[in-house]
Amino acid sequence: MMMKVLVPVKEVATVEDEFEIDGTSIDDRFLGADLNEWDDYAIEEAVQLEEDGVVEEVVAVTIGDEDTEQTIRQALAKGADRAIRVWDDALEDVDLLDVGAKVAIFEAVVAAEEPDLVLTGVQSGDDSFGATGVALAAAIGYQWGAVVNTLDLDADAGVASVHRELEGGIEELTDIDLPAVLTIQTGINEPRYASLRGIRMAQRKPLEHQTLADLGVDSEAVAGNLRLTAMYEPESESDTTVFDGSAEETAGQLADLLREKGVAQ
Amino acid sequence: MSDILAIAEHRQGELRDVSRELVTAASALAADTGGDLHLAVISGDVDAFADELSLEGVDVIHTVAHGEEFNHDVYTQAITQLFDELAPRYVVAPNSVNGLDYAPAVATRLDLPLVTDTIDLETDGDTLIATREMYGGKVETTTELESERAVVTIRGAEWPATEAGGEPAIEAFDAEIDEAALGSTVTGFEEVAGGDVDISDADLLVSVGRGIDEEENLELVEELADALDATLSSSRPIVDAGWLPANRQVGQSGKVVTPDVYIAIGISGAVQHVAGMKGSDTIVAINTDPNAPIMDIADYAIHDDLFDVVPALIKAFQ
Image (tube, rainbow over all chains, first blue to last red; front, side):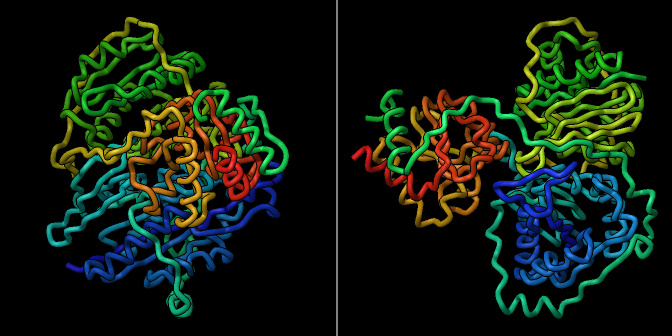
């Protein structure tokens, strides 16, 4: 059986070392944009399954405005076959797209695409809810596994044998019935860099824009009831002694400290 | 109703620390709402766990005896049935790997909003006010949720553990688990952090992170570890990239270490890393970014390029 994989990906904001907060967000001047790190591993896993001949189509989907097309093109350049970008005027005013809203949108995409497997990152590097994949699975009636760092797919038996990375260096070995949603942990593979050829090919791959109406999703369903009311830099909990000076001077002060603590001679 | 339902966590026969922290967080919420704290213990030796969790602030413990180890379908079914019976205001779960394997499903099934990875929680009766981090700990946010009911997960080691004993009622809850709906089977566990080196034994750790940039630059920190007679460890990205084996990884998914001195080199200090090393006696951070989260827990810091400081430090010990 040849399978189809859907990979929900997200463009995340990246923050410079030095930044300023403007209201409840970081000032645009200090923000960049990138494909979410965990989703990069999910795309790679899906593309490898296609290269192994287990999967016949990899479809990437994202929720984002027109500017995010450059990010989802990265997924196409790395080997996804086509992409869907969901955006709608109704989403412009939502300041925190909560898990329920994302699930409502991806649920409609799953209904249209009918994938056998959904792979997405464990979490996103910006708001880190870590919940979309499992919440989606429950909504669409698929099985699921969170924080997967090894995936072995038996398409004929309809089973994904995975390792789930638990805390403290322990992995749980689990067999999961398909269809399933798996959230992918970093380190499961080595994400490729997009080749020049891949980048050129990505320009010709289908990237379809869909609105909430196209998907049959009510704009009420994405309004959510979470509000971000404050953002601030965390207060430092410890009194840090900062060594100042040239590298030789700071290294000298650190050497003195290590000798004083008796851990180095 | 204004009750709180918290879900205990255990693994391979032992309660996990976060269970006692959950009691602290959830009993504070119950005090805010004026309701009772119900604690659910699902699977495993539930009676022994209930004994251990008879803690101050817990009003009722509901035991669900079904299976040994965690199964997300059993948890999801048991919790949704407990919810139907108790109609709590908030369901509180740990923000652990297993917590994130059922809490989102519970929220979806019950059509409730979900707030994960909270580090502080309060409620004024109508609104749940959660403190969360964003951008890997660079900022903290206040998130307000106006909903009569919700599912919330709490980050480990943010609340103190409740140690004082209490006398909750212990009730067996007869959950109807639909075996046919269990779509996953745990076949075993594997320890990945084994091997020749035990970083949790070291007195002095030289620990390297993403700031090292290239695999060939590792030589530099290896040389430093040699000069100091220290043990080399790392943060997650170095192990993900395959530059060091898994037994060198410090953090939530790696080892927890408590050396006399921990030297973090080019490590930003993501929460998962900090969870594995904050118990070190003395923490030294070498990083160009003075705002990196590691600086919040560092006792000593050098805000400079590791490629300048590390060679100078090696020289100081030759």
